[in-house]
Length: 555
Image 1: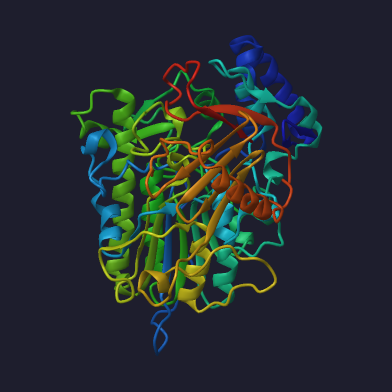
Image 2: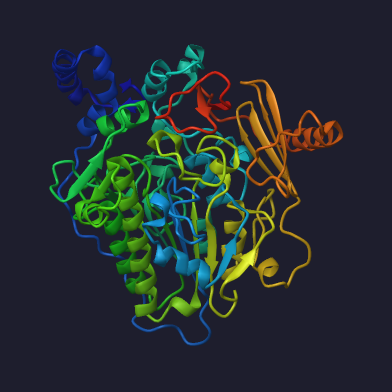
């Protein structure tokens, strides 16, 4: 039987009906539907007590001869451009230093124009793991249950209502089956084929069925969670401080449905034994130690600093200068993320591996409007779920001692699609020849071993909302609202002056180029059932007024 995108057995139907009746009385029918996906998941797979994780131990001694470099890719979730103190900014006006993340940049290269694969998490991760625009294989929208979309559509405030497509409900697959196609060669698979032991930790969000989990898509070992978010701890934990956004329907859905749980390979779900960010970092350190004598590729995908907002009380208490509770919790989460990155870097050093490891750090997209904080992507306009710079212009660093000179700045646009080709080149792995690979190995450009720039253009699409970056010119085209935005980023990096009306020749040139690349993309694997308004200049907690800039994001 299938209900709400989840398949359940006959054994659970009676129990589910009982829960439905009790829940309806306790919460009322409207609130009950928030809880349905989580109830079904708990019926299907109750979270088990903590279990020890034993990583596959590599050789007792390294093989003779020169060893290929390890590759450690660290991905933050919804980290705003201004959340790091590296560029003189930082969350809460810089009162939360991020020395460990900053050190990756200072000891390597900062891509000052680094771009996400997409403005939301799952398509961006699909681009990273394949080296291709996710729209080339139809992974255009972020997997989410139909109930989520329906609830969000009913709770939009402001002058621009959501557009919900009831007619698509019958064609929506279960959320677990919203996946990257099996024909795509993921980065873990490519690295594994060329002698690397491959390890994945944290958030996956690229398929939840058994055959689409990371340990079946190229990773030898995988510890984490398959969905798009997770709690960081149980709410009853006295060592945790939380902030809940009453203005955000997404936040309400997450609190109602997210467990604090992970799986190890094909295990049942179980509770981590510490705050999620630290747990993933400590487990990554253990995996590094287990693999110290063989080449390995590690994909460490933190859920920090994605909602729900939960921080360690010790981190929260260390920031009394921040008076706003929500900002203080968020800042404490950033502090925890930086500490976690420091643990990973310390583990590499302790095992004598830091000089022979390519470390990559970035965020899957820009900071989100739904946390209600205005300055997270400063100085850029826009948030996650927009193609304005705040949604896609992300922190992007690489460190590789002996190859990349320290404190290097590289200004030409690069993208998440380049991680695939760069990691493959470090491993000596040839790229697939039977498909378009949109990314390139950026290292030769960084060290002045290649002429020109990595890309003439970069492309993004979400339904009828598309963007093309051509050199320093950027075009955004939307259907809702029916509008075009043309910016010369060389002279207007914060997108203040729309030149679509004053540069008709450049607009026509960009529109033609956009149309050409758009025709190369695949149709979406499932429909975009919800089109939701996203304010460009104000977070969700601020009242929207007529005349405010907005776009509609399809999912």
